Image 1 (cartoon, chains in turn green, orange):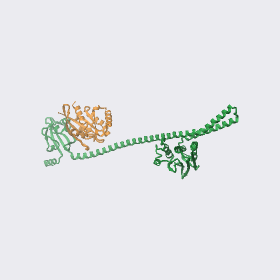
Image 2 (tube, chains in turn purple, cyan; image 1 turned 180 degrees about the vertical axis):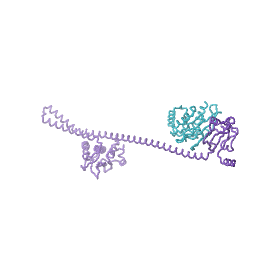
Image 3 (cartoon, chains in turn cyan, purple; image 1 turned 90 degrees about the horizontal axis):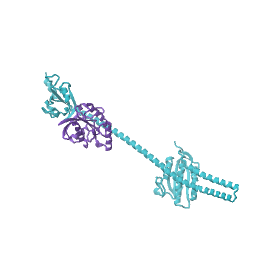
Image 4 (cartoon, chains in turn blue, orange; image 1 turned 45 degrees about the vertical axis):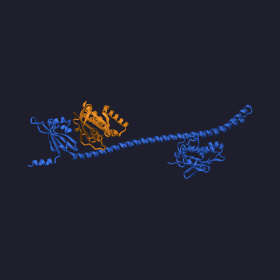
Length: 396
Length: 167
């Protein structure tokens, strides 16, 4: 038998160290290399050197009493090594069977396995952390996106409201202009009505009022009132909002604008010409086109008032190229200063001392954004020419 | 001198090892090295005029698929539950760790730490703190902010727990 040799062979390749303790938890025996794991000494208190065993008095008692066969504390890191600690019953008591006088504490070196395990766990935890971080970043990104979208929505709403305000402002300004024109147009019929009323009164006082004169004068008065009523109707129509694009006769539409302003411009010695193709049907919002034309007429008029001369004219020409309708409004009011002509459609840019700088901006926006048209300006000899291009077919 | 077994538990990478390292050696490293199994450190903690030998168990952090090994909790006298204030899931799991402790004994004192306080702004930190106290239904003096990096709150947490252990 080679029992001793076999044990020697096993022992030379073992990964276990041990020590033996008595019932007072004192070390009474230990293997040679146990120092590699703890600084143990004969007779020393086990808990001083293996604090991992502290608090396990109950488990120790159970093993001493033979109630538990083994107790294990897995993967304990000690002195840069990893060990499993096992507590086994030692020598059986002579007086009491199944009771033990000593316990054997085995330290199993698992450094190699544990180091590999540590690397695997490290890798897994690093990946989990990375995924968690990505998830958090994604949530943050989503939050930022939502916030950004909300900001954009608010900003768009704000801009739309601002745009509406500007349009309203421009509209009020034009209404003031139109009221001025109506006043102008009403002056003559009002005077005529007043004079006819005076004539009727005098004839009545002189007893010379006969039925024929009365009927003639009343007819005249009714005619004048009809004319005034028509002026108001035109005014109402001018500001009647039409929201859907439609086909409309460009020439007729602009003629209706000129009908409104002709009296005032005539009295200011400004000649307004309307020429061109009378048959062109444009697509858009006719009232908005009229408002833009009126705005251009007013700008010219304001310039003429500022710098009057003997031959003041505004020419409006209607034409078409391919599927586009073209309105050209030119004048000889001096033109736009070259340093601001490129910015003349920008908001708050004006050549007038008391101007708001919104009229042309709104006009361009009406033509280009509401009607898919184009609007631009150039200086010509002694004046400026605005060109408005409108579609002649309804898009899908 | 009396010895007390103090365990640090919590999810992985909440800074348990760093808290112990800061407390015991007053050192800190930014590098994350996963703990496996358990490692014990010792430090004498002064509590008023008494001294307590703290046997501090640094236990491998729990993960979604692998909870902490409860063998390590046998015979513990007190516990610190660590969470990472920048990772909500580690805070949500505090409740589970409290349940584990209380399943062993209702009398084991514990303290919850919101670690890595240096990585978050004060306003957020306060909100997380009060949410946690409210959710757990525990006293405010059982939840602390800590930063193993700066050392903030670390000494106080161990000293407070040691006080509770000798009461």
